[in-house]
Image 1 (cartoon, one colour):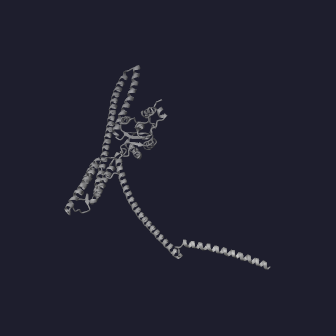
Image 2 (image 1 turned 180 degrees about the horizontal axis):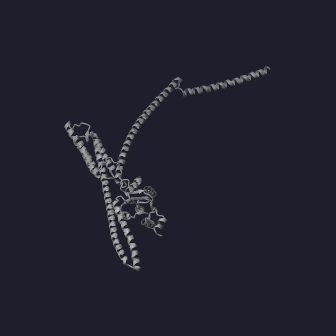
Image 3 (image 1 turned 60 degrees about the vertical axis):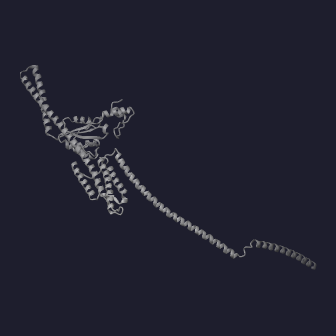
Length: 483
């Protein structure tokens, strides 16, 4: 037991010795590592000092970043201000461009108005007088007002007082010369516009004068000088007056032409009636004489000769009665100054479908008048749809014109008797006002249909016949007699 204890103790001593040696070796290694680390971090002697230095570096970085952010923010704000200023300048430039574009569009409208051959010259009338001579007086009064404005210094004015080399007198002289030049330029433009105004360009001339007014005032704005709007109004009114006078002159010429045509028509009708009455009177005298002679001869005649004279007397009596009736009718027509024929005619080749002329003639043979119309500057002859005799032909004609006034082809000259209306509408109205009439609904239009058929054979379309739809089909070709 003791030996075992000794052995155990010995072994424990040996183990303890080994452990101590190992601990000493590890302690040496730790010491060496400590020395190495101490040598490496010899500058780091105080952790608090290192932390303070790190915080100081962080503060320096923070201040630098804040300064950079402030600089960037200020740059951004300057950029925003500059962008707003640039936007304002851009908007101002855009408004200036829009204004200039509007001026150019207005000038373009003026040029198009001058060059537009499709223009019909329909304008609102600002002035109306019964005769063209009345316009002369109105224009004279307007010119007097213009001269009074110039003399009184109200046509062009200066709103500032000028000094030339310190002299108020020289300044006034300069202003007077400038205003004179402005009025000379403006009046020259206005006079040219008045001289060139026509039925189809009054709008262009007024716009031209207004543009001149604006241009002169824009050029003299730095000198605080301007033409007055009242003077502009007088010059514009002059253009409208001259235009209205031209319209009135045209109306008077058309009225005179219509009166002359009416007088010629009435004179022709009067001569026809006189001729018919003279012929009827000559026939009456001739037949009466022949009848008297036949009655004397029949008293002594016998047999076949007697029978022949009896038949001759009956024929002469019939012709004498007819001549007397013609004479009475001619006398009655001469006394009835409102009797005549209302005719309804069309010209498909010249005016298209559903366009009818509704006119009136007092001639004994109304077809003579219609033939005259066919010979008057139209490429094709008129077709007759109805001829209506009336004891009061002017009233019937006027009633038809009033009924279809909204369907006139010419809305300016009311003496043009063409209407875009259906034949059924015309027939219905005439039957209501006059009674039953005979209507020919289909227009023969022989020359037109033959021409259309020939053009169709050549593969050509209508030649210069306006915008009406005149398509040639097989029916038109066959009706024209062209196989």
